[in-house]
Image (cartoon, rainbow, N blue to C red; front, side):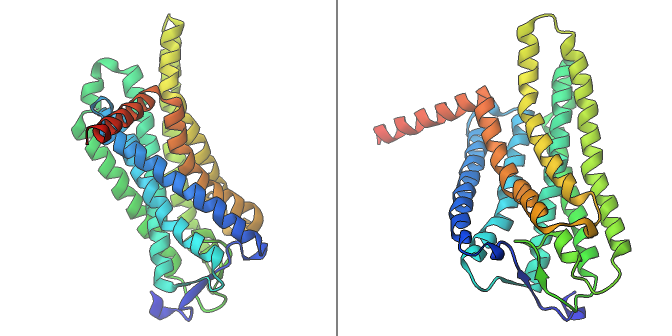
Amino acid sequence: MANSSCVTEFLLLGFSSLGELQRVLFVVFLCLYLIILSGNLTIISVICLDHGLHTPMYFFLGVLSTSETFYTIVILPEMLINLLSVLRTLSFMSCVFQMYFFLGFAVTNCLLLGVMGYDRYAAICQPLHYAILMSWRVCGQLAVTCILGGFIVSLVGTTLVFSLPFCGSNKVNNYFCDISAVIRLACADTYINELIIFIGGVLVLVVPLIFICISYGFIVSTVLKISSAEGKRKAFSTCASHLIVVIVHYGCASSVYLRPSAQYTTGTDRLVTVTYTVITPLLNPMVYSLRNRDVQLAVRRMIMKTRFSVKSF
């Protein structure tokens, strides 16, 4: 792809207009990045080590945390380097790979959230058939399907962008090679490519979201039939964490990707981009650790075991 383009590298403008404030942003984003890594790695470790969390719901939470860990690794280290660097260039192929892996993990997250919604539906609405509907074989197949689907969609989207000629400006008005910012630099008619990408965005974002809404419609209907208040509270509490993550994730992603690139406005969209590349991955471990009693107890057990092992040593 690089041979057909005059542009051999891209300049990531990022937050260059903020001047000295970039040093402050570096400290803030570095702290957030370390929290994201430690939070998601803690959840992954706890789910792997605690047998009480070896259930489909926590299996998918572990896969989601793994995906979000790599999702942030693709973007944030480069952004942190650029905040302290004068030279913010990224080679053509590096930009290709960054977009490919970013989109791959982002789409995987969308699909996983849809599957997690189905898991809650099966657990609450079909409890007698739950072991069959969400067997470990089915869980594995669903997880693999989400990952493969995410990276196939990403391959199509990345190819549609970088099959275009880039012979003019190489200034990407973002802190990473985002699809909306890069496609604007193409020196050819991008209408067909943007239309296909838009349709793909609708399928990836809207279809799983509709699926989640239908699942929660059945869940609410089932929960309202439960006679005890404690039973209703317990049922809704298992869904609350998932719903919070869904609202933030789909809300931010939809505001950026479900519209033409001509409506792309630098300041507002960069703020939204920060939300779904930094805040959403940060929100996932915080929501599931602060709101989920099972995860809290598992973390405490792991800490107690670690302390006991250290004392014994």
